Length: 232
Image 1 (cartoon, rainbow, N blue to C red):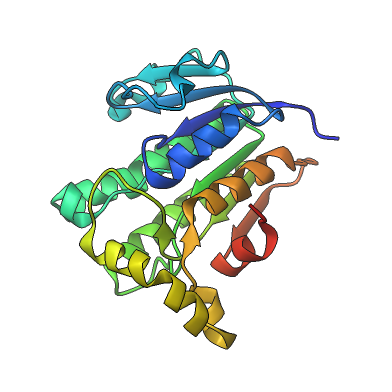
Image 2 (tube, helix red, strand yellow; image 1 turned 45 degrees about the vertical axis):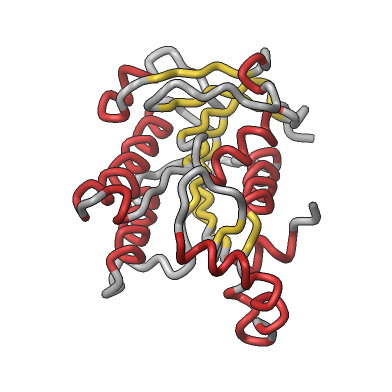
């Protein structure tokens, strides 16, 4: 049986990250959780702010090494992500979705983390003509080149769940999701929307199952793998 682990989570205020934080705090396999945020957390209705397992670090992500100087983590979770609308420029988008995850990967490598688990996106491809997919693919490529002990790349399709920010296109898809699940059969099944809670549960199970044996591991999990293995 794999021993309990200490987790570092960056991106804890996003849709997947917040679901993952709740899960880790209630998961006996995880003994401690440190999160790095840019702004103080709002009081949570589930009271996770008072959880003894939780350490909250508020810092500028551009000074990541300084912010994490005293942190020890067996598993590093990266759930960072934004949108062009929110970032306003492609450069700012790349900073959040590529540069920060790559810097976090460097930190994990240097500090001997056993496992690095990152949320990417379905269709990620460094050669894609679609900017979003290309940046996600470049992020995956940079992390894969670091020589991390275990790198797990999770590629969900459209994420379902309650966001703090309103995204009209995603909201329409959420309303249509029951129909989409019925229509997307056969070859289309791989594109089915997935609940953020499912992605979080999948990532937590990857952390608990880590089994580094001296060989570098890079694994990619497509959307259908998340659907196939998680029972909420």
